[in-house]
Length: 252
Image 1 (cartoon, helix red, strand yellow):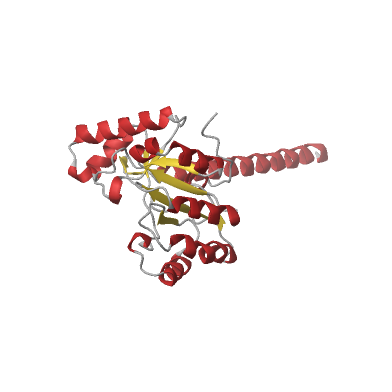
Image 2 (cartoon, one colour):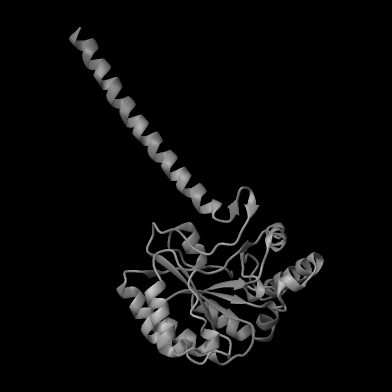
């Protein structure tokens, strides 16, 4: 009888262990599904404007559609503070400046797109949007970037129809949650204060690296160490979505 009782106890203990293991597996699966679901709502595609607050990651993102001067200063600041970012480039700009695109990639930053001609998609017909995206994809493929998955609609303007077209092209739309409006050059201190005051876990920060920005590189001198002091870690969009840090290897 004692032997039977002990055997039942052992079976119960194993049963509890198996239950806990299955429960943890379910939690992990749900977490992964949650990350995937950020791009859809009730089965409809939508743009990602913020990542998970479960990780200390924030994403620095930079738009470039024209000019070839300020980006170098910004890359130097990022390198000095060991900060990785995601650069959203128009295909037309990337074609004109393949050397700069190469420098961005060699700095282990992530390459993403803003279409080809940087024309607001809200002003285009559906077929024209598709053509613009496909032309951009061709441009980046020629530069060696065949697996770009993130797109920021030009000028940040989009609607349901635009998101459906983006989804049909197997791309994901990325927006932002912190916008210091640096292209307006509101003042270095204003850029610094807004970013440091508003940024927390999971945020996507919108910056620009076109020649129109005159204060962004100087603001980064304070912003980058300031965000680190808030115990935040810099992550590319891919890392933000996946919830883990990984080296970017877009070009073989």
